[in-house]
Image (cartoon, rainbow, N blue to C red; front, side):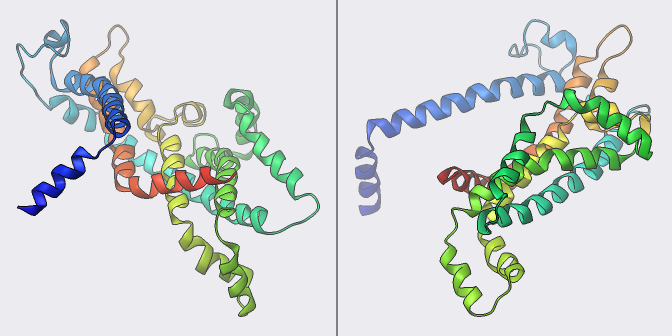
Length: 289
């Protein structure tokens, strides 16, 4: 009988501020879920049932036929689009993470005369809009023969991801205790050994946060994919959502909703699996900057 009493006492000790915080957080979460529920209802119900509002459940005849249609569509199958997106998103995430993490550790731990100027120049590249460089980058890809290839999109996303990952990881590395690295250096460990065996394991939360964000941005990209991927067989999921749902004279909103949910499922799953590390990495990044 003591355990229920202890729980009741703890509940009674909860401050009104904590209760208000949870109420507001849950309220915001529910508001964010409402559009998702609307898209889900649109994907499993025929158009005549949602004309008066997707929240109207009379009549309610759900069906997953549109998901199967989107997955194996003869012209724009989402299965092939998701595969193409994976081919681009995985290297488009790992390459900038590898390059920027190495550079970030150098900027955080080593001093040289032009370090701050170089770092500031790289970070300022984040302010350049994608639309500003689209034509020069496209002409460059034409000259090197990479248009309509996955490599062109991978290279563009890698170049676009390095500046912000560099800023993120450099700030995170500055929050790590340097005494551990100095002790390893006294024992004769090289800089690369310290980085790979000591620093990287401590930076796993930040790496998870960076990986989730970069993967989501590459996965959800439509702008660069629309410019560089021209063949129907090379189009990614975001392109196929548009091609699949919109015809010449009408739009299939149920098919559009189903294709959107198929595309959305992968980033949501990855975020759910890495949520704990993602939050820890984001908190660590904001401690010191």
